[in-house]
Length: 555
Image (cartoon, rainbow, N blue to C red):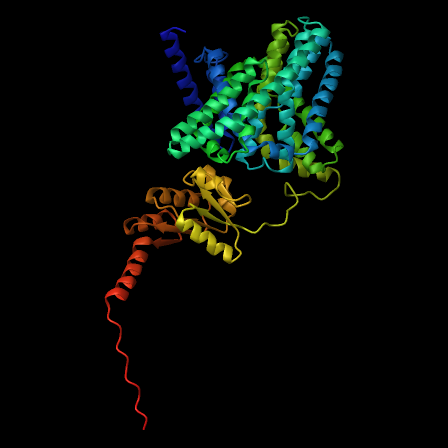
């Protein structure tokens, strides 16, 4: 790429991000998800409409970094242990949904006059749902840990695992490979995936923690962020180099790092960087769609609506077959009713092998973007759609996403585990009050006995405070000696939990008022306490003992 071309691409990226920001902000003002604004920005500035952005391939390559960072962060959220805890329903449901979708779409496509090869491409593209869109929206709505959220995540991971095998099947039916060659390629893909996971496990288990410890000992936060990005992109590149799905490499590396006590802090540090790239990704997806002319618009809308209804119904049926409640099944189906960003990859493979003609390719491509545009609204309407389904079965609608579990006793969050923090923890233990310690020093965290409630993280970051449950906490105690850090913790906590009792340590009298202004309920002024202690001790040293009064005379 020449110097002039590079600057041209940079200008296009600036224009795309600026439009994504403005339209995302407009979507938020209209109480819609920002993803809608990002997609519209891509459609408007792409080569199919205004033509402001012409370097679509370069922009899309950069945008894929956003997906890698997003999947890496999701992997940090779902460690290997937590992934196993998802249970069998997502795994069986994901595999069953893919096979059932392929079978039904094959039959429908053949009935519509498509060739077998074209039917396979369309079925494979329809079978996939968007991991990037769904997970982001569920995270924003704090529904990723709900029953339908867990189902959706597990099924999405199964779909992502199926991307490479589906590409092999498409190339086989497209005449580029024989059946035996396809089977051999699938076996090789599985072997490479196992080897890649083994290599990830060795590096992340033995190398990465030592590097993070080295950066943490020097209190070098920048190096920690650089190392996390390198691990994410390294996993992405390794998967791509071995012919596997790049996002699966990002997810796998994040998932294996999710068991490290650095996971929460890494996720918080990457959040700003990830946000910019994810916005670029969704805008680039919008650029792929051709804006249909008036006579084709109705066809695209009907096809998109039909795809949503078909996928939602099929996934609901699969979840019901796995003996889950109707309410959960319907919400899972609604969440996964759209097509995927990988659907574009499969459709492009079909066009490249000349299995799909241009009109069918563009129809499904535009319909896929339409389903993505509707996804935030569908997920928001999920509870009402589920209630309607229950009503149609003549059962009483259920308001909540899950049956209320027994309430856990709320804990006191203690930020900082120095001498002051230890004194607070000891007092809480004596009273039998639950607590959770948030500490930034990795050596302090790793030196605690197994089962001790301590987490590694920077309490000045609102992502970390959310992660440790500050909204549900009984109280917050800030024991940090650094006045600026203590002020930031109090400010972030008060923003997240307006009614939370906050007790903060004010090391200097000068900063006590600022802590109160930031939202601290009580500020313990360290200088006043030290002054009282010093006065008491000095009086004991310099004051003469009181003379004993003579005994009363006995008459």
